[in-house]
Length: 133
Image (cartoon, rainbow, N blue to C red; front, side):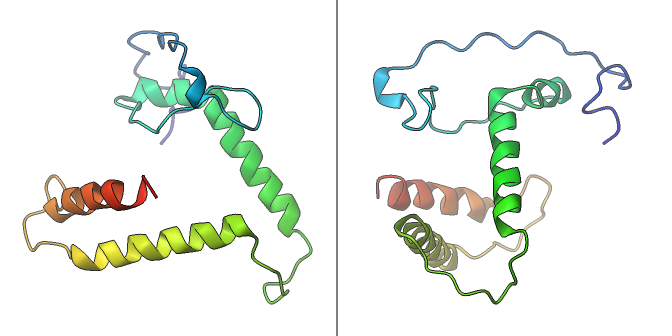
């Protein structure tokens, strides 16, 4: 929406600055660049949080990854053969597991004001069955 990336164009102002993140234990240190990482959690609760996210290290890394994927795919045809590496095979197995779990929790016929309640059950099963794998 208009104004999300530019706070001067939006009718709202950030209600408070983003508090600094506390240091995480050594077990959560990222392997690739020494930056800290943690399990994902919801941090966007209001429009001002989107403004801060767009200026975050995480947002920059996501955009860098998308740019690298774009550069790697340039000049390749969709039918170009390629070999799946171990990470891709693991991701495919994980997605297959999620699909299997999804089949166990079909949407419930209900009013959709706050989303389908079956999603909560699917999400709990997904965390239980795949996060530890």
